[in-house]
Length: 267
Image 1: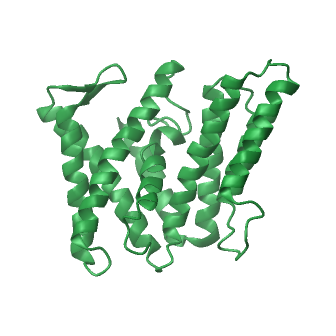
Image 2: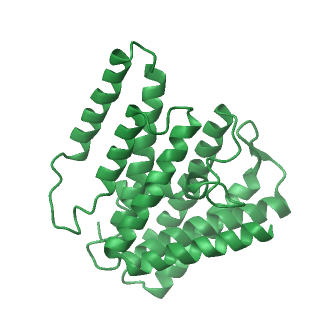
């Protein structure tokens, strides 16, 4: 527990420091996190971490996290075009390798590249919000996610009786999930009370709800595929916590979801 707390504090300080700095420093830090996260995903699938298919995935992740906006550049390929090109390349490898690298593996590496890459891209986009309040939006979403995690843990410990999804995550309870939703909404409402003109109450309630429900689903998704591959943690980068994907599973789902539904008023 001591190791877990120390690692968590150091990781939080490092992350928040880069987030406060913003700009190229934050973008580079997120790119590093994304590449490590994709490496964890690749090794989980038992694929060669630096084989041709994985390298295509790394390039895809780097392309999505490249600071196009900061440099006032237009990407040569739109994201949907890039997705198609990556799909073509990975499927072609199944032919070139004569199915030694089969379509199931290519599909997993394809999913992983966009699961990780798009998730971190939306985290970066939040910090670069066009209304100039990216720090506010980033902290609001992170605090809502963390409130959901903490609320679910302590509510589940004290009131948990009914298992939420025992075949995927045996320790999670329905009571804990409800507690997580409540605490996430409270956290978002606090940000609304601090800046009501920036974040109306109704938007705060919806964002808190989304952060909890989608964040908990992100956690369950991570648990589900780790069970398939019979691993406890996605990596060992963070002692006591696992890997990047273990710590950011909720982020990778919540940030894109909130953007796609345009729940933040600046959109």
